[in-house]
Length: 344
Figure (cartoon, rainbow, N blue to C red):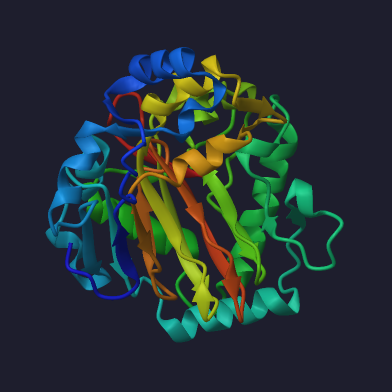
């Protein structure tokens, strides 16, 4: 990747002479280590060899494709490469201009066009909580009726939000189609006639708020994904378009730890908790994720970011002097690989 703005790598700290440096591959070895050393063995340095090789060199931890939106037709296999792991993600610059993104952010700040806000569960008591505009599939009833009804409302309001510039769904469809070599790109239709999924949701993080380490692959284990799992391959990528950024902080930090290597050990140690359709890291588990090498990204306003959020743990750091606002969701190919779906 050729860095332009907002990309940095961090290598893991050196182990003290008394530290237990162990290299393990896969969930079984991690589970055995936890069983042998006790609940807090996660404090030991455990490395996944496949993703630690480049830490001894000057190469970036992850390989990200950095393109201007005018160049997207030159990479018709980009999304396939990200899914295959030959690329880890992509930054598409200037999908909307900074001026257009500023207009959209200002409209949201004024309360136009009247989206319903869903505060983060642990922040509902705050005067200015972090919140999501629109209903996510992660946070809905399994029958999807209310979700699809709110999705239709979100689509209408989103068209108003982007009034005077290219419609969001039109623009994002163009970009995804170019990055898949011309495959049809669609928002999934629901299980009942007239229903449709949400194309995206909007996430607002006021200053001082971030999002702790997590991975998104657990979506397909949830009851509300029963219909989606009949349409798409059960391996998703994430996308978001940046609308506003704080002066400092607000970076996306991606860790060299994969969900499939982490989950078995955490379940064995009872450090992984699933409730209300969300997967949460308990106690030292979140701190453990942060011991892995990482790479930080801060795309500019108007830029689109795509990466394998289902596989790699990631978090958003708290910002200062301003809010972080993004619009985005997930993408996955259809079961027959004849089209690409996107939703939130």
